[in-house]
Image 1 (cartoon, rainbow, N blue to C red):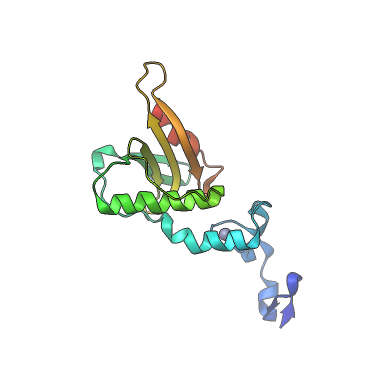
Image 2: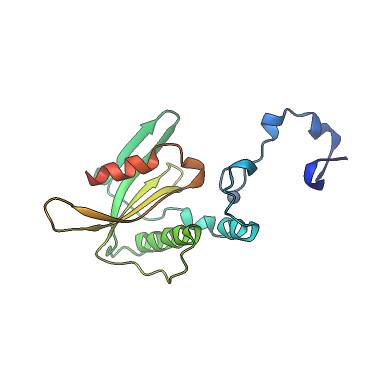
Length: 169
Ligand SMILES: [Zn+2]
């Protein structure tokens, strides 16, 4: 066994692997150096415990889907009214909002506000990578007020935020 930095013991043959291929990703899909310095270890562990909440369940009408294909990434964007009756969609919305609140450090009890609309960006594997919650307005000039916007940390530099917001134009 060979001791690496931070005192980790690994079999000797592993230390010959090139540094690039040994770059480990955490459950959030980022390397150690990409983890925000504001995330404490317990905060980060708590995110990992809740990451299952980012899984989309429910049915969406195909006509409502927008497919985004950019470089090596493809995903769907669609909206769900917060007053939707479908139980699976409601659970999905609540779970994702829970996770987003957790990452944003918001401790308020999660209540879906029925007048709002939520836009989701979802990978073909059904993992949610983007969240946009808006309140539709009735004025002619401004149609929506943005309440919350979130993009999964490993997709932050991929234009997901812009693509979500483009739905409001
Ligand atoms: Zn992580």
